Image 1 (tube, one colour):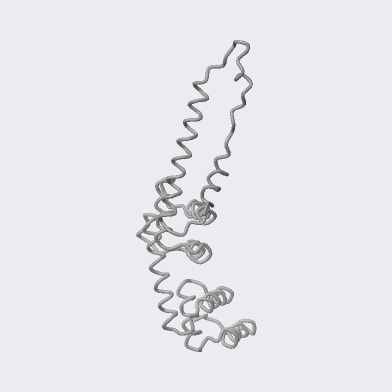
Image 2 (cartoon, rainbow, N blue to C red):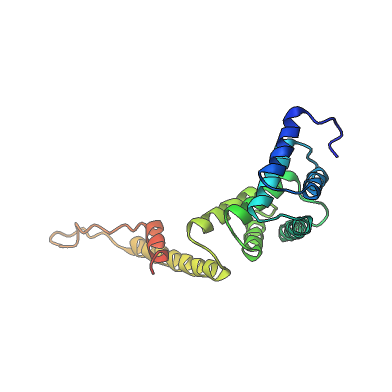
Length: 203
């Protein structure tokens, strides 16, 4: 699989996977086959995948194949949401999608919604832009599509309030007469971002 004689360092890494992560020989064999099929023979990448499988409770070739098939399907679902249908995902895109699913913990429906919005806003498949959307949703506690809908509703309400306040300020005619007790009245400025966060954090 690796196309070279194993060095002492590489051998030690495989022994670690065998002894400490308790991978069977068959599972190690499939691990290497899988990583090579993804275009990487690097032992650090192989070890990273081994750790991910270990944390996910994968201890057999059957479970490993189920996991890799599921992720493979998810990758293509994300690409389709971006409007990409004529190629496989590249390594950087795979890493980003894994980050969204594992670190952010988002389900596929939320990821595809972010991708759809990215294309609508930028006119192209932009993984970095989608990551900004997802990072913002993560920070605001989004877990379901209904949470996103609630944020959209709140955003529209705040936007309407801003427009109304702006309209009132534009229509206000400054008084030149003396004795108007409202002349020195200071219009209150609202921190809408802070207000949004307060509303979202209400029980």
